[in-house]
Length: 447
Image 1 (tube, rainbow, N blue to C red):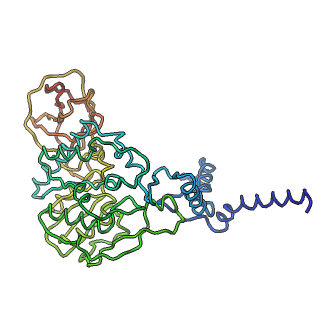
Image 2: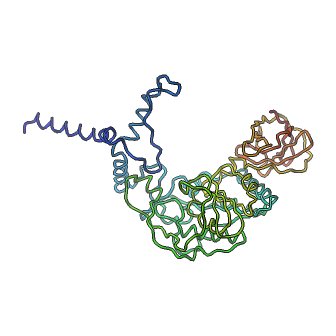
Image 3: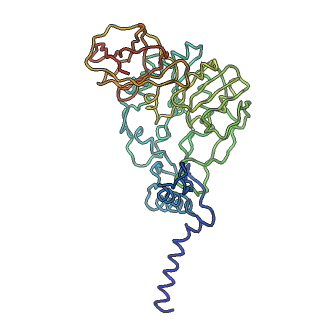
């Protein structure tokens, strides 16, 4: 074969390789989503108003990037090469651990102690939970808060060479404040550390079914009822880890779950698509009613609790829809939140009327507080008010709002000096009271 012919053959081979993704895109209709991805859809030349879509070229490029043929296979191959020979993860959200373990990157700040919550944030989170408990009890419901531990907090021995913080973690610091306030808290960290077996998946960020059963039994005990789900029986079952799927979207390796084999007696009040549903309502064989606010750790947890109660509502809403607990006249209200997301407690105002308080004597401060007001769709007859204090209050200062009719209400505390509360629509807020330097300060509200 001549030199020119060899060069031509080599060039043709390279072109064929480059055309493989486009062959998959145009002849096979693209690729399927993997790794919890949302792939860009095929754009329309026409815009929403009937004219030309000015963003069509950019949208078409994103579509081609997301949907070219064999994309998942190529990502998986590249990920395997990087993991095997360089010891690195190509997915920013996945950390390669030892012995085939994978960890969620969002848990690294908790593990290394690089971004701890401030004293003000911790007090605000604890105070907000105390207000939620106060409201639940006023409605005749028991309240319970618990934190699902990060996997790295329970199983650090498989973490890569990252130095763990020796300082108390945010969950531990928050638990101490909850104890001071008398807020009901279930410590799952201590419970899981007492166990002699691994109760989280190697390639997923969550507890397995046996771990969920242990948590369910503990929740039931804390709410005054008994269950024995953690005693089994359990049977091995294949499970596709969420972290593995992010890293190897076309991979075929499976994790092993310990699925509950004892049978659970409950039905759904309305069909659900998956355990990820925003709202799940059940009827079970137990007694009483439960409203539980949960995150993805509740996916394997809720079936046990659905079996434990006569009726239950499991919600992934944030902010917390306490109005649902009132509507359903719940006997128990539980909040489960994963350790890495504790700041969610100071980023949203729970949907509930602000608690009434006695007004306190305060001195007029300098400045004012702009107040935003919006109708409360989930709480008829109320308005959601929110504002930000012009200067930081004391770390342990509440925020009170006085109204023109002589009323006084306590607000929920938000990050960066923010606050928010639901007031009756007819109420006219006049000023905010908080503590600075140990002195009560009053600032007018402008809205």
